[in-house]
Length: 270
Length: 270
DNA sequence: CCCCGCCGTTGACATCTGTCAACGGAATAT
DNA sequence: ATATTCCGTTGACAGATGTCAACGGCGGGG
Image (tube, protein in one colour):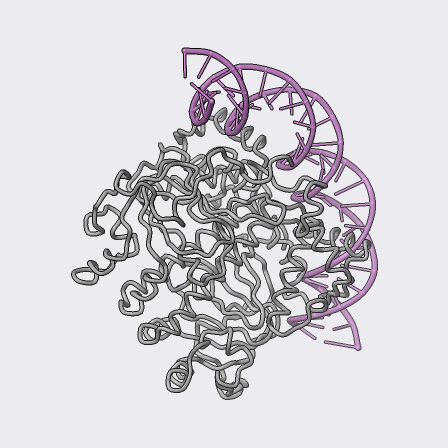
């Protein structure tokens, strides 16, 4: 237990302070109306004047370096983030300073709405060079009071976050290492597909070490499972790049197919 | 793997159909204004006419038997539930028919708001004789569009649900059996205290078997851990009744105290 | 450009946890 | 009231996973 936190070298903080060197940072002055993710992001359902008013409170995308903390665990949250490219992780830190990755979020997804309750201890950190919009929570709440469509989408996204978390919970509570990884890869693949990417070929949104943490495995174990699945011809990987070779096979492994339900014990407890 | 689902004998369904024998069921015609949980429930922050309007859409508490399904996994969700006494579990079922308990909810808590997104596959089931209010989701959404305070509370409760889930996730992903139980008991104790109950003496909201499932443990393992903690003098239990004897000791075990941070390895992965 | 440090991999080993099995008591249905 | 089913407990054992250790490549910083 030498390292206390995830311990990355340059621990910068980009979100809580005003943009440094504003002007030199690319601002990508694109509007919501032009955004590829418009239909899945917060302004889904907005149009005309409402869309414009929403756009006015959004801080449009800036490029953030990797390993940058967007929100420190415990600090008062100010923003939600819409990811346009790249990926971020959410994590919580215990009193001993060790952290637990609680989720990974990719392009097309919105993070931080759970802070509306004002009770979060989560931290956010970019996992790679990431393009994201910042949405001030206070303004968002104020605006949503006037726009039912916006409010509806906020609830929708929050719900999705819960569902996503529950699904993930099922994975780590009831599956063994091999299945956890297969499950996670299929999950990432599906989300990637939904957001316009490839289902079978993508880059892992996080490094192996953090993926292991997220899945509740030792990183050595995860590494072994990767080798194992590769050996079985289910996937190939090179660094962060992953190519799913046999999606059906992976699904069968996770237990999507009822056919193998009794072949191996899977559920635990009652 | 003989039992396919949690498999309880009387699998009734009380929520999706109109109240059977309405009139013979006790209705507890109490209003939100009189409710002990008013400040933590949905109508927190409402008063006067708004409170009355909210109360008008709520189906005030009825007594539901234990092991009754309030919402079937996969079915279209219609209600949120406010628990006034008793407890319910949320669970998801995989294609093989095995289910994973994803959460336990006790008096003073509201469940089902995550269905607002319309994407849930969760099921709800009472764990004991339970007194609960049903809130029709459609009406709730409509009303919240007119009442910022209500909307705010909805977001707040949804956020709490996410936070709760994340905390639980930390437990099952990063802790060993012994700690998982200690953590869970402390969590229940804290929630019990918050809702006006005792911190050290309470009844488990769910049976051992389901608790094991929730914690991602075999029920035999959970049983052993219970014996172990009891043997260490940390707690006593008799059936569902639990008495925490040494809360500090439990906290230390979970790792709340920084003092023991380096005594035992705890975090896994990066 | 080079060096250092981090990340991922692999092996060996300890141990925790799941699985199988049997038992007794409690709760439920008949 | 009685019979049956279910639940929780305990033991024995095997297997999966965490831990410790060493190595090499890649990347970042100087």
